[in-house]
Length: 287
Ligand code: SF4
Image 1 (cartoon, protein in one colour):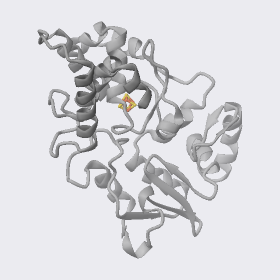
Image 2: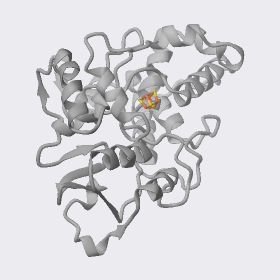
Image 3: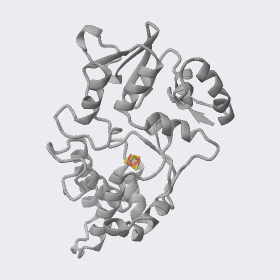
Image 4: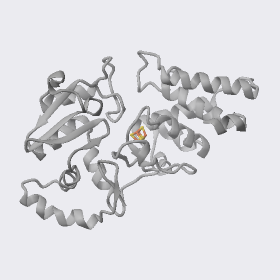
């Protein structure tokens, strides 16, 4: 089963892509991932936050939230400028994760052919097409949390000793769709892959450096002395509510990659994940 750019699931045997390599070469481009992707665009598709629409023999790219905006209201950008666009948020903060759902709006890019499309997507979502294509393989190159952590040395060796529950909580927090639109295909014991509906078709084949850093932070927190605090169930509900509100209204200026900052939204999400099991059953049912 394959998930296509428009989110539709359809059977696409990997062998078909391999057979298409010859056709792609005949068509003037040799990247099978690009060829497979272009074949599925149809009348338009959305890749994470970018809307791709066939236009005048090429393609129009823009932020999906600007899909219905007039061309005149959007800044026309060259392909080379997309790299800088993807580097920073609208507030000017660095975007360490290019799949974070905070790509700037207000632009459009017109590409003339599939090679330019590949170039443009490479600026916006580095590695996305190759990963998407690799994920179609009968044996996708997926590395689990445990396998990746086992290879860590130095500062990140600590990621090996997270208990399964904490590793799963840290993953849920770090990979939340508020922070990353890659669909996690790798697993931690007790945590299945992300459903495609929750994110985008760009797959995540192994834990990224941001995840490892966050797992390290979660383990460091776990090793700290514990404060004595036994909240009533009603107070847990208050804390959960406060965290959800804070997540919806993140503090400005917090660096996305700074796991050590207690105001980092991923830290709030981790605490939320730890508190939720303590909620009374009635409150859980309302979620
Ligand atoms: S590990 Fe998580 S945060 Fe990192 S790219 Fe994958 S899904 Fe996104």
